[in-house]
Length: 419
Image 1 (cartoon, rainbow, N blue to C red):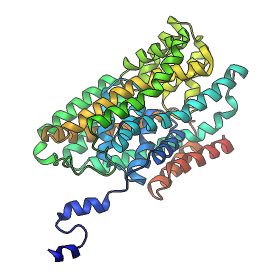
Image 2 (cartoon, rainbow, N blue to C red):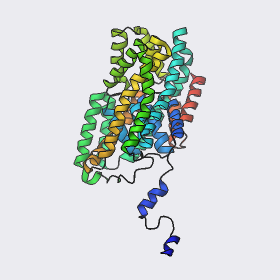
Image 3 (cartoon, helix red, strand yellow):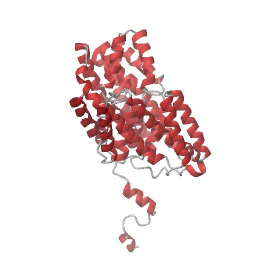
Image 4 (cartoon, rainbow, N blue to C red):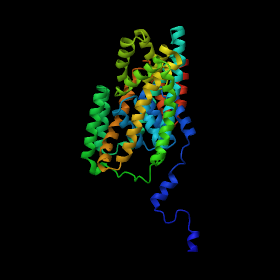
């Protein structure tokens, strides 16, 4: 019996479990999680896939807090749920890292830079009526964002595509989404990819990790009581916002209108534009047609998703409180739905059939990332300087593995100097 006191730590533990314990990073603090997503929010210029790509670069590639397959599962889930895809992926990532509290903090910090940028740009716009002076910055940023998305696509492809049928799925998805973009094509491709994955499950499906040995950075097991307390803590800011909104019928109306649009929008921000125009220009008259076009242009000059245009509308209608109410209505309801669906997904991931379907869906999603890069290209200034900036940015990301934040910052400076 005494001899057992001198056994080395971990003796009697299976070698695979010892390996996982040694490789698993220390739990990420909520403060560090906030800093990471502030960085992600500051460098995600160019639409929803830019934010997904920067999240992949920071969370998967550089910090190794989640496996690439987990992020792809979150992207698949966000693609079929309503609301802003990028923020839903962020909420999923935060939930996987630190549960409900992590989801709330990740979403807030990812949206905050874009929100503050829109408040600043919108205030200048309503005062001077033009933002032409800062456009050269974004002529440099846009090709760098294309490079960030391409680099993320390469890494996701290497982790998700292993068999010939997965290669075919990824290439077909990239081509279809480039030629016929939109939600119907996305849903069709994902459904077909899941069916093909089930067809080839004998060779493709890998056994899911047991619940007791979660992947690095996975959301901790939470008791029902603790989950309720976290959910209550997450709703306290909402209660304060609701109290503020009830004091002003206009704020309450803004929050309600944008919440309704968020839950009716499938497929990302560009699908949201026609609904937004009909609502804020034609129905309520909150913006003039020219102001609506300028609002969309300003979202291209800010980090974050296109749906941050909700802050511009709220700012025009009711100042900063209006921007807060509109943004809360836009992002919070769909994020709550995403968190609930994330919990359900974690419970069914152990199924062999689900794993087989996900093998197909992940391959298709890796291809879709390349189609997203093609969609961003048309926003770049058509010149050889843009091509050069994009090529140098891609080289820095892939060959030298420089952080995306530094690459985007240097591209912005180059745009200011040469355009």
